[in-house]
Length: 411
Image 1 (spheres, one colour):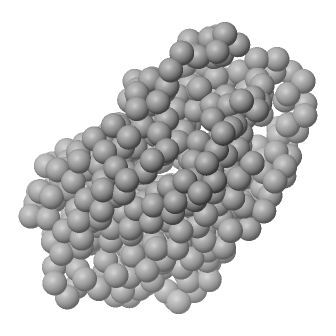
Image 2: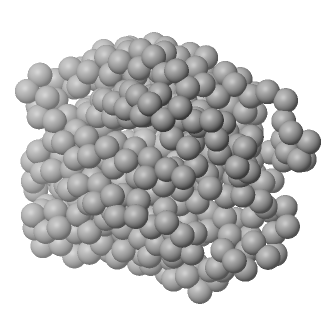
């Protein structure tokens, strides 16, 4: 049975550690982007940097999923944290694009393991009945610190150079590693019950394909991500070169998007039914795309702030509801594989989008790229809404799906 006191303690430690590390990541990403832009890098090199962390998530999905579902969660979290510390430290001093990208790839590989492990462990920590609230709290806190992280990263980079923000990120990985070692709840996979053996033998992609609700929803959201993620490459150029604003405005614009995501994630935690969560995922994606389309016609940099808040609300609303659906519709013994597979689908779409954005930035201006991404994303969200199926219909047509058993929920 779930130890409520231990669950609260472990959830607090997990949220604190991950929140601190997320802040460090947000500071470091801004610093690295400003470093490359300041060194005269082309947008495609910025896109390569941002996409590098997503590549391992895509290529290592199958082995990572098996790893998470067959090994002790504490071992994976501590080991992954140590790799992240080792990969971040050299970034403090490096300026050449190639070694930076290699180290970011290493960070992505470690993050793919720790992310899937966290996703599978959280239901054990809080219990199935509190899963939606826990995911909402986790994403809200993570995004909340990112509200200030971009501005802090820009300010630190401007005052002390880009090495200081990256050093802060390395230190936050140390904190996260210590936090994971203190968590008492562990997910130690053992012999699966007879009813779970068929699920245990299948990969995460196969499990997702068999779910008539999750399969089209994930494909549709991945298409939206592929279309709209291109703008991440050119935001710094839109702010600094098209609208002639300073580095602080770049950080403020990023922070405004994160602020909206906090609000969206908090509200999403109150959506309890699968019907509501699936519809909210689509609606949130459409809101985010509509806001991005507005970037294309913004007359001044200040207009980007309310648009970013609106887009962030849709982003946070959609992301939290989709994350909850992935866990609640998956058997406990398969959550590592399903999480890794979903991360690969969405992360792969994001990585491909960044590379595509870098290429298109050669022929399109930042405004043109925002217009194309926002409008095409809206069209994709509209098609997804038309083809959307209710959870009840998906359940009737998916005999292989079953909810987690009560015995699994209390383990």
